[in-house]
Length: 173
Length: 173
Image (cartoon, rainbow over all chains, first blue to last red):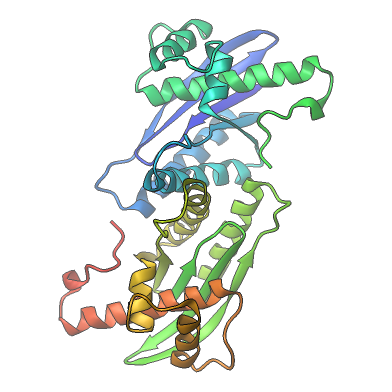
């Protein structure tokens, strides 16, 4: 099973592609899609969409797991991140890849073990769990890998209860 | 000049295609793209994207004018509308069509003449200005036609000041 975790944004989209076999996790590729502030919104969204589409076609993930909005952010941020997320979700849908979503709380619980974890704790655990040589930068990349790990744990749990329907965590409806 | 006005949303996207020659406005086609609530978000976004792309390819607008967010809406609404808007903006960008955006205030001022106008006043003015047989339904369609009328007025104004740079209203940066 290959998971592509994504932390959406208009300036930086973090992505992390992780292979998941049994209890083993392996980072295949990770990084960020960045768009320059001097580009127009349509240009930025097109760049994000094109890059996501290319990553999906190249790495052929089984599932794309996307971080859900921080609901404490403001309306303008929500709207801007929403636009970026829209084209990412579209890229997955066009490629016929299943999509799941997780809140930051779910990611923290899956990666660190408790929901109040600090950012640097997530980064350290991501580095450790995937045996990376160093902490991935920018933060959005570590977050994206965290979402992929969360998806791996969630789908493992689902298999343990021997029911695809038992997987109520991240399915996007 | 052919303008495609859009009022974005996840359940209903209103659209209105208006030809603009001199001071004459003519409604070419208008209606709504609707997505069922039982579809997943990826499916709804893909439907909106596909339908927008088809409309753009069929009617070949010179410009796509999109209504800006109501900033008094809540974070969840902003995020949801943002996602829909993202794939609409992408459809225009992929087709190489210029995009502009207008706030509800700008639309009211352009269509009715003052910013505090009620919804039914916009609908009546849209019907009158475009000589429609009846008020377009649902509201989102009248709103989309209102955005197209706003774009027509704005671009006419720009020509009157003999400067493309004088057009600071709607250009999306």
